[in-house]
Image 1 (spheres, rainbow, N blue to C red):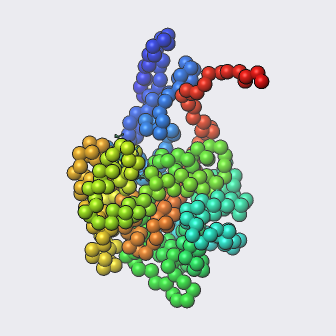
Image 2: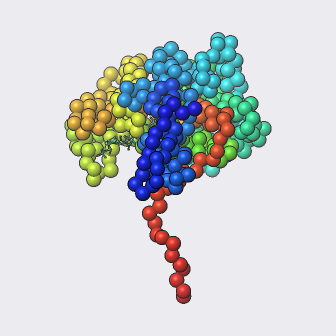
Image 3: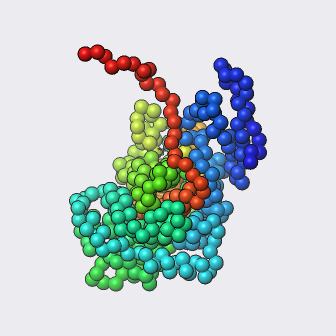
Length: 426
Ligand code: SDX
């Protein structure tokens, strides 16, 4: 039901076009522009800077205030008090689980951590130096070849089992991508370990000795998973929703999300931050890189800085920075050169008029790479870990989309090509 009405007059068009205006529980009001097509008009918003593509109850971001809420709970409080799996339950169900519900949920996830043994053969087709994200996109898309028993997208139970399978199997697939790249045997999951301990075991364990996860690193890993879990209608989540609107199966939709996340403007930024810090190499080179980032003729961007929505600190970056200090202290890494450059780069950029005027602040990717590198994870695996974490966000939005009556997504365009013309007589 519209709360208000927007009235539009257009030169050359008779009368006033009335557009309903709706208010959410948080955030800006939205103008329902659907009546425009009846007047022969479209909206025009390349990059969807001002477009609400859907209604959602999952996550809210206030970019001006640097606020991120998952079903109303601030990300800072979840990072402090919750866990990745509890946040998965929250994102899927819109509420925190009771103790019993959480224990049951954890048990279900543990029951799905292995992948079909045939999937091991997929990896053999790749070169050992294939980028792990190329393998991840392929293997996730192939999951639908193994689960014909639960692909009815109109069946809520099928949608739920797909979510369980994806939450459970993404760490296994991610670790397999890493093991394959270093020529080591795959590690089977261990159900006696927590979600993040199990991931570290599959990444760094080997058949010759028992792997004892470091509790501080496991906690940091869980926090990294939690901080990347969901982020409203970002590029990869919007891709998953659009793919889902065609009726494609959930594994294909999640593979589309993985592919979208790979870009350096999006989830690929964490790997790009480390590459940038290594390219800077020494704090004395920072001014040159800042100048390049400000030069409109230079395509170089300060990786890990800026955001389409945040015009303030990314609240996840603040938590990530604290986690970074904890991990480096635990590992006895006192003067990590990358961290030094990152801290000086942050200070210089935050005082530079170009960045201040454009409200460009460090985002979630600025510090995560330093933590992952300190844990011993190569930069080529950073976006794989982001994809692992974001799978719950993707599948929660995909499920929300299919929980309501829906239509296939089909944007229109402003056509500026040739007018109709006839094929020339030969
Ligand atoms: C993620 O959407 C999400 O929620 C994403 C994400 C999630 O959790 O899903 O938060 C994860 O993708 C974080 C962002 C990771 N990307 C990077 O760190 C790459 C570097 N950042 C930029 O590429 C950029 O900031 C984007 C892509 C993140 C945002 O692009 P926009 O929306 O086009 O940037 P903008 O409109 O705010 O830019 C305003 C100005 C422009 O210059 P002018 O035209 O005004 O002269 O700021 C400039 C931009 O060129 N600018 C930068 C910059 N980011 C923006 N200049 C230098 N370095 C940068 N990093």
